[in-house]
Length: 114
Length: 114
Image (spheres, rainbow over the protein chains, first blue to last red):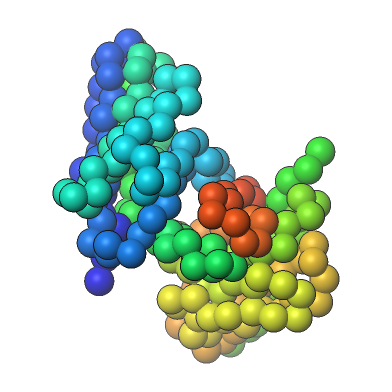
């Protein structure tokens, strides 16, 4: 049972335009969400996160939006740069004290076209 | 430099052999985790440990074992009982407790079966 879903396995975007990566979840107990970026043969690196008490969090070119009623979050990258080409994973967590378990989506491969 | 190191980068296993993957962190994090990534899939949790001398099974613990004798180290043994061990293995660590702690990942170990 995939509790965190990234339904687009791949996405291509022109350099300079906006990239929008989507993530849906089914477990309403999730209350903290993260996005990770991963290059081939490397570990994921943390990008940005959002708590369920917010609907938006912004960090430079990266903005994450959370729609709790739709159980949907999205990552916006603007403007997109060639170095953004990577696989992006969304992850979710239930904030039970001491329990840091993350549930990951299957990833979306983003390709930025120069 | 603070970080997470995993060794070796590539590891080969023969049939019936146990192999151990190393994970060390100098971030003074309490919690450590092992994930497995297969092509086209997200990261799946194998084992996690929140304090020294304690660990819990994740979603796919069968065929794996871990130990946590030191805060800095969380080795993973892939036993001969794991029938499909070929995968990319990722170790992560985080602070324990708190609402918004992030997991940080090592560079990964690719395990191949001969």
